[in-house]
Amino acid sequence: MSAAAATAGPATAVDSAQRELAELARLTEALATAIESEDLDTADRLVHERDALIESARPRAHALAAAVRATPALGARLAAADARSRERASARVDAIRAELAGVAAGAEALRGYASGEGTSFAPGWIDLTE
Image (cartoon, rainbow, N blue to C red; front, side, top):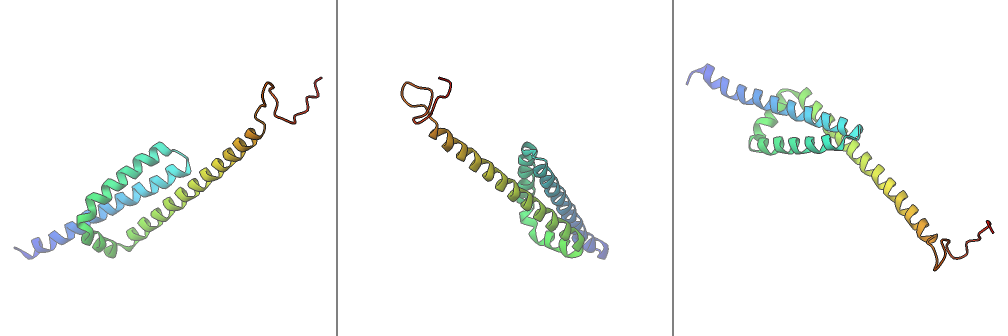
């Protein structure tokens, strides 16, 4: 094996890993944007694409780590994209919880005004239309 061939192998593996990391960062950034815009169908698709990429890259974890060491900016981009998508997802979940709490409070209030027997008004309701 020539010296050029010996150096081409690892460099190619790092280049390939860098492309995978760049794609992972792109998907993660797109995921954060989809969550921000409340496009949950796109977010769901991106989560599945991202998971598939992570699973396919798992056997090459050492090459990916070498790629991050070789290009710290790429690692920082990926970390920032991941933090942003996690933050947006967490904020969206918190907003949904608040909305559900409001719905639950409204449902409880409506139960308090549920009609009594034979009338469309709740017990204790004063009908001022008479």
